Length: 206
Figure (cartoon, rainbow, N blue to C red):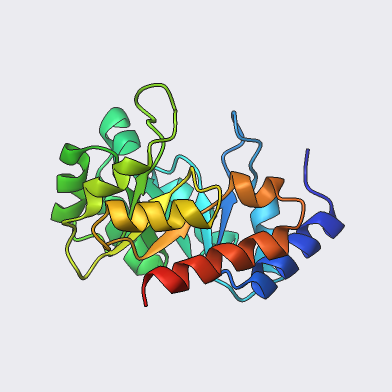
């Protein structure tokens, strides 16, 4: 079901007022109920950078992300390795289209691939996505030695300020940002929840 106009309007207002620096939008329809239509409606209401979050592995996927207004797309190393798509082809196309590749790597081997690709935005999931999908905040330690020129984003499993402090410590102070989805959407006061997360992020990097 598509979110209502009022829901999207409130979500954007809460994100901006709460201090979010970007918005991630699910566009994967199968299993996640995402849509490009929702992405476009959010793009129309904010100037914040927008990440199109889905299983993108072809030029057509990237063209859709760009056409609907995304400023970045999710580039999962595992998906590309599974379907046999060219990492460099899509990253190069993204540069041509002026849409940033946000590379998600979830194992030591995948991280090495991402580094070799020269990725500037890199994410590591706090969920054991190749196992039981459980949350393990110690996974942030996988990114402690990422190149300093790459921004390291800790993904998923963040419930509150304490979790932000934990992933920051587990990464040896390497985490630059967090991507939070479920706890924000479930929060009774979404704006206040975002504010608390942003405040915690600022506090740990002082």
